[in-house]
Image (cartoon, rainbow, N blue to C red; front, side, top):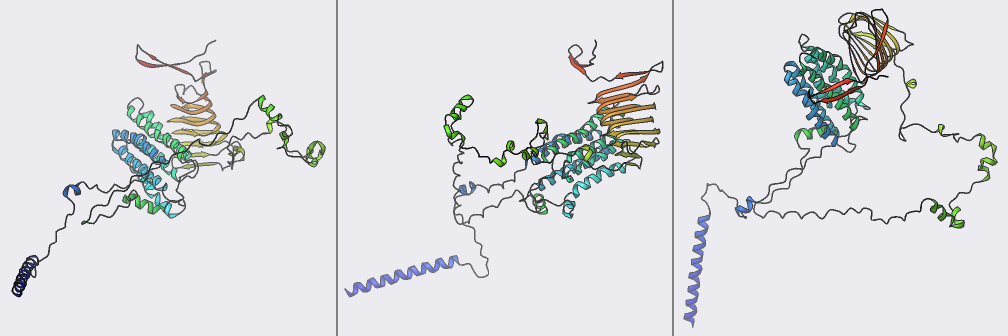
Length: 521
């Protein structure tokens, strides 16, 4: 018995020694020698197919663009781009200037987008001037191209764009910015009409180019009326303007925080639970009130209530009865008829515009700036105006009422805008008399002028001398325009300009025919 136990103990010791040797061998094979580097390869706890199928982190969500900025993008891609493409067809300095114009509109788009996400800036602050600095630089670059190329054959082209580029300043107007845009169009029309007249029969491409530039003013004016009629719209809950601009420039405005990567040794986190069902919009679930009887049946239903019919009436004290108090009748403020009712069409809470007689009267102005005479705010009280002009000088007349203006000598051109009852007497002009948005206009030509342009003019009379009998008159949106000429007997003859035109398509000639409508009888 003792021998068997001894044998079992020896066998157990040998097995323990063998196990110890195996453990030592395994330890020596895994421990690297001294001085060697340890390289640990990352363990892959998931199959390759699982890693490949792991979805990439979702792209950041973009901040929604306001509707006003989207509409401005359409304006850029259609109207402004058409002007740039037409300018590139002409090439040279015209195309170079169009690049500066396009840059100004692109910077305007950036400003509108940043303003929709930032707090309002004071227009007199340094921050606001810094915000519109890129737009100001684009305006300056556009005007410098004209100033540096006065000897260019396309100087009138460059001058037209330089005179109208101030429309980019509409973002600085707090009320009715469309008025500034319309005034900029009037400034550009002087040289623009000269370009159209000079290339009318030679190169229609230049005429089309001028029209594309005019279209920018018309579309931008409608856009400003629709979205920014009271100035730039800011975000009261937005962030500072500089911070918003930095975000937009760095592209982080549309970024969203991404989830941290899952540890390499573990399985990827489970996907988020699917969103719940959308909320049910409960409409018209309230019980409809029973319809009240109408007409004669409603009167009978009220009478059937008996004494309860007068339950909702208020008892009037004798001191408040006008038929018992003559003093109340004498001081009554009740209007006598419907004529005393207010005729103000403005909505409640808004002030109606002041009539012309109550507006602040600006002082009359007559000054020569360079080669341009400027006459403004003249009326009958200020007296008539007389100018001695030269061949290089033009005359700009605006906001004048009931005044006679005499231009002596040979001048270049005359522009009249937003005037009423203005009588113009000229000797000789090299270019045109351009009248826009005026009423009761009268023109007397003593010698010769080549062209008269009338746009949105009501009631105009033009007296032509024998020397100016070949003057051409172009009209658009006019009413009641007459031309007075002198016949061979030195008698005046009145010739009304047509106001009705009949147009139809001729299948034989395959073209549109327009004829003046004449009334006989």
